[in-house]
Amino acid sequence: VRNGFSLLTQMRYIMCRIRLFYECYDGTMGFAEHVMRYEDDIAGFIKHWKTGGRIVITEHIDLV
Image (tube, one colour):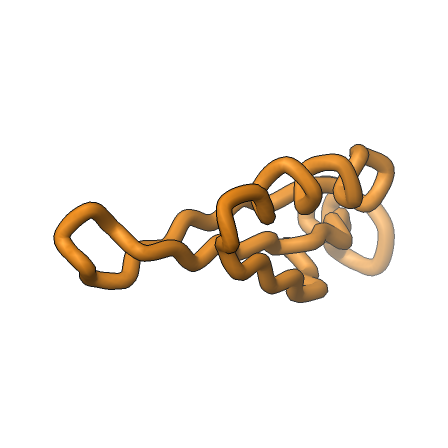
């Protein structure tokens, strides 16, 4: 316990949110979302998701 908080309370996870936007079979737009650690192969994941003309957006997030 430090400063009145347990270590679990103080832990923060710095992650990357990856969003994929694509056109569905009926012409509507769909999306998928995945959260990854920066230590993971984000570039490889994005390369895989970009196949077929899909749009991939990344965003930095802090999970507390």
